[in-house]
Length: 319
Image (cartoon, rainbow, N blue to C red; front, side):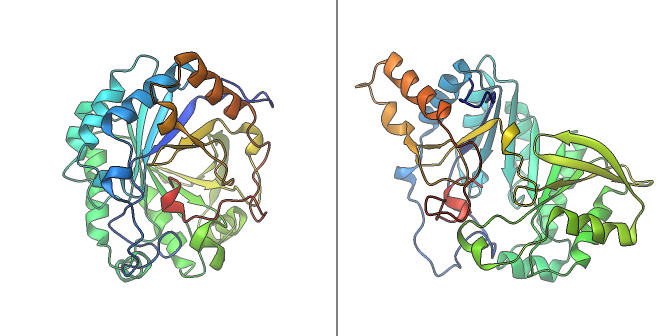
């Protein structure tokens, strides 16, 4: 499956819910907001598996389950087990805040989960509680440890904003000292609540780390991340720079929101209702034609800060 710019799309992100058990300041409104998703509007287990099968026919090899917080779905084990049975799907990944992961991850692995990304913006307990409006850092760190005990590859995703101290960057990097995990610093994108904050660029992150550590550029670019290594440390430091160094020319992914809207570009509010396309009134040929045309005509580059850019909060569009 290719778009008109020749980019091969083989990676699908599916949001399982826009709901979450924390309220990160750059992602979601506070607890007083009641504008959240009811179960009946979410894609069902059967719809998620059907969509995964459909997209596997188009060349999708990797599926990432996101949210909101995907582990809030009571059928998460069934979803992963169903996707794991689809031929051509080579990798099933999960992005989570980690708070519910420790007790679930062993079963998730048995059902077919291959990799885990954990969102973690600080290792300071009080700062974490403030940024997440009440999250418990210890639960997340225990989940990281449990994943590593089960030999599940872990990447930690961190977004650093003006709400945090620069020391948070140093302390997150320390997690790579004795463990071969990746810490990836992601530039804040101007989506939803993120528009009201100031983020650190990837180069800001590197400059801060170089004042403390001897940093080796690995000249490795995997997916969207450039990788570095602290001298003597086991893990890697990644920087993802969607704002300062646009990598749209290599974009290989599309995403589906938890209510079934296909987004061919994260930055654009334009969508295609996949849930509707699953209706029997569409023939298989019509369904495939509409999806392939939509992806073929996706944006060449991101369109942040334009009249057509995404206006919803990040939890509503799949993280």
